[in-house]
Length: 318
Image (tube, rainbow, N blue to C red):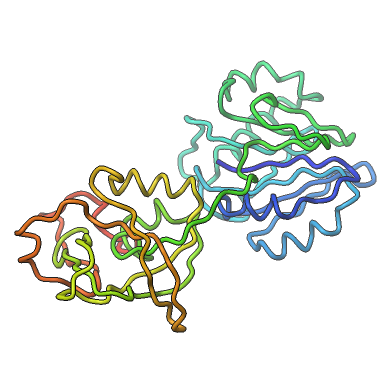
């Protein structure tokens, strides 16, 4: 899901909101405003460049879009907004079925191309068509028109604030952040990193201050059994993880049924000690304790005849 903000003229630009929303939407940034009777648009893949541009637009009605790729490729051509007869269009959501063979265009890009063929003069002219395409429970469309007005499809699904600004979802609401120490497939370059860690910020490489027993050599994933002097100072990575992403990690790891989240002291590459959550196996068997303990989990050399599920591989290998 992307994030859209409609900021009313004269309101301060809430950069704290934008920074928070950017945690989950890092695949392109667009903003539009009206000047001299024409819609102006700025698009970039560089977040710092984007924020610099926004500072120039404080006094204007602007529509802000932060993209998270769900269809099409991550490229400047798929950054919102898209030109339509009345001005420009922004989208939050995913429209299933809007695919074009042989193109890397996003679903929104394709939608803009399709509705532009109608040469509509007002959004209300094609509102029934848009509702039929987007439905009424998930997708939101925002149009900045040439006359400096804003039109919405499914505005009620978004959030109005007391200052008159509108947000397509609550990604701008600041979440509690947790330090999490990962040691297996959640590390950068491993199979689950791409699916579970893209909303989190890398802090540093680290190792556990105390020795722990970790097993998993030659396996698709490792697990930590707990503090054990016969083990190692386990090597891994620390991330700042927002609460919503932590709940996804909990489901992946089977917390609290199969794993505990244990506050663990780790040492960063500069020698600083911090406390981070680490997933530790709840049930330890005698057989586990007889296995070889490893210091660092590395990519296993699997073959497709042994493990046929892609989730066991690093996405970097494809």
